[in-house]
Image (cartoon, rainbow, N blue to C red; front, top):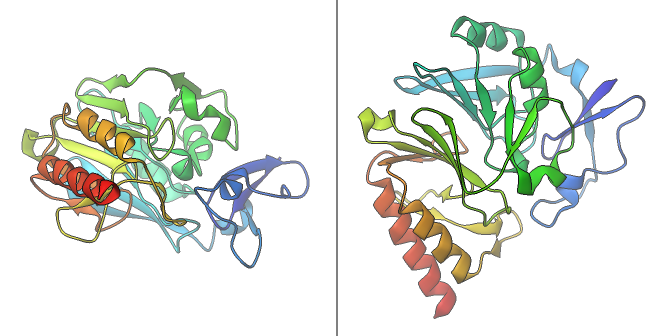
Length: 269
């Protein structure tokens, strides 16, 4: 069975022969098929051309990226905790050096993801690390492009992964779009890992909310109001977004509330 990776978004597909004719993630209006057309990369060709890079963001938190990038260019975040380690979001491949390093740190108890655009190599990571459970919201299972026995659906709006590490389903970008709360982060003041469920933007201290980011399709005011209300119930001071240098180091909770007010005001003016 060959693994084919969508060059545009990084999604994985398993096939005995040729790659699929299209990528369901790119065909969705929240993403796009490049003007040059659908292109695929065979997983086995990447072992000598791509590698994971590591960057410590704060104690017990490491960013893991891919160099050179494939697809959207997001990062994964590795959270270390006394009860076990958790991977938040995923990148398209896992190299041997990174696998060995993670295993030396005690492995991973769970892989949690913000939304389908970042599912990418989740099955490869799970299998390489010993069959790690992949926690996916029930609502977004139709967007899975490579199935696995290790996928563990969850439902509702809140799911405790480990003590002090909790998933919150906020919806918006996708029905199952989620964030991860890490209580011990930011010197015990709390961290929110947002992916692009709540998108950290270049303007310092601000975030935004969209149905489609590349195609600039906004969310309605009622959805942004609902998301902001849910976030207000989470304790955090810092946000890490889905990409390098996308974070709000302090007073992030106030930043989300302020950003939601601005967004709603512009939509309703």
